Amino acid sequence: MTAVSQLVASLLRDVADFPKPGVVFKDITPLLGDGEAFGAVIRELAARHTGAAQPIDAVAGVEARGFIIGAALALELGVGFVPVRKAGKLPGETVQRTYDLEYGTATIEIHADAVTAGQRVLLVDDVLATGGTAIAAWDLLTDCGADVVGFDTIVELAFLGGRDAMGERSVHALHVVTGTADA
Image 1 (tube, one colour):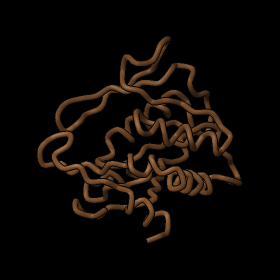
Image 2 (cartoon, rainbow, N blue to C red):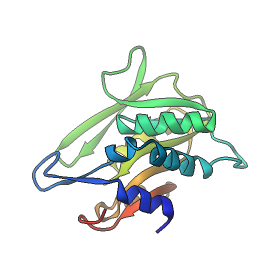
Image 3 (cartoon, helix red, strand yellow):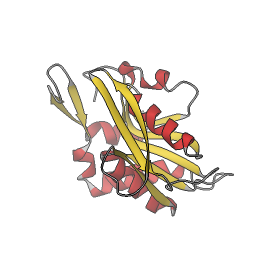
Image 4 (tube, one colour):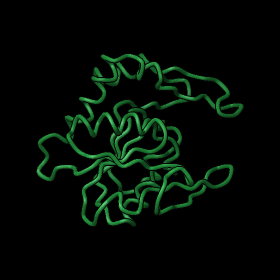
């Protein structure tokens, strides 16, 4: 386990029965509230992409905690930020994608002009669980012409199979939780 992975683990909070009974929610807000730790996480994520042969043109973050991570990472990398929002939250012309959840469907959207053809975009979120939202966001960006270079996350809940669901897409997690009780 890397030092950053240990740092993330030490600041994860388990919230029982959220958002529904039987679920143990992995909450990153204690990490976000620790400026030194949050800075270390952002710098670690940025280091993976700094000096790359083909630099990233933008960072896209999934609502809501992905906005926090994505905006900070975009600032650290010196690139723009693209918000991936729940349907109906963005003004102007949008492009949407609907995807299945275990209990129904959800729709996400971006501005129609948020990315340009061939633009290299890094997609980020706080947690990778089943992969449904990450896949939908990746495909939405790709449909709009972006070259999505990878999905970076702070925490991966490996026991939910999100990485496998992502298929050949590049996935990087700072901390991997292998069981429901792991921190």
